[in-house]
Length: 433
Image 1 (tube, rainbow, N blue to C red):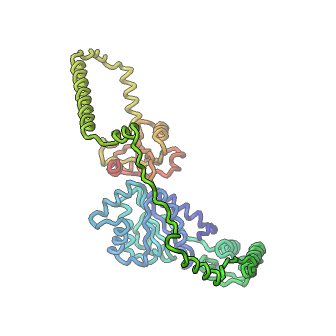
Image 2 (image 1 turned 45 degrees about the vertical axis):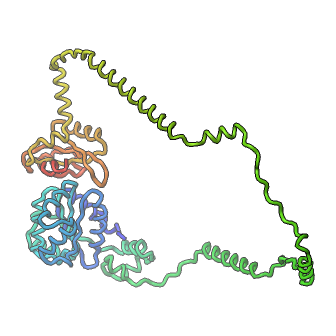
């Protein structure tokens, strides 16, 4: 269970903000400080709009093992690794979450930094671990810029709240304050608690007693003897033998046989004979009916052919020449073209150019309105699939270099800057079209 107190909630928000911009976050705390829990909760929040790869540094000790972990996640061979990363980045940001990061060597930290630099803009790295992690990252000089976050311990009041929410145990702040020590989540989870007697749920106990009484009552009723007995009429043996003797004394001629059914010898009426003749299958009549239907079909086909020949004789209508467009019409066409910078425009641009992904729109009309706010000649949009949903991605640019695109991001209005825009090369966008 994630505990949002002791600034844990703000740490998660900082991770989300940095990863959307392709940044690097280093989170440290003493053993049992709750770093793994924070990383797990951040991963749950990130999967809604990013590709999240989780790595446990306890199982990775070399470059080959780190690359094997990434390859197993994308389920691709080594030669297709870069193309798989490009495809993932085209769908949205890629975030690599590393737990137990204090066990990463300088060589592995440098490899993560090189991958991030190669796919700059949408490749983020979050490493969490115990306190030595911070010194290892600084000594490796893998990242020129990184956000270092140290998780603080819980106060006595926060520890009391933690025990109540996570372990459903009531321990007062005063009792915890007597320990005079720092409180960390793992230590609180392993802390022995005093015996607590909670009040019995009397409603549940009463319901159980009523059910038991009903079962006993039904069982007692089923054990009482039934008074209604079935009486069978049994003929005395003597009378039965007497009747059998009387049957044996009968002479054969005294036995009366049932009369045999009479045969219907009357002659069928004329109506019955006609009905019998009508239901007899006549093959000649069927063949005549099929021949008639075939002739009717051929006659209909001849009529259609004649109608087609008559239509061909009719001269085609004369189409007047369309006058050349006026200057006003040409202006309207230019406006329409400038307001439609979408798939065709993006596909025609140089793949080496850069663009800034501003935000996602749920409808095409909304995307066009956002482009109008930023300037129709400065923006473009295209349709894509994100999390099995159809969205429209609004872009700013194109720019000749990444630095020029980065400068344009810095000049965005606040309402667009808060959406978390990031840079993308046109080659990745064209691959998604």
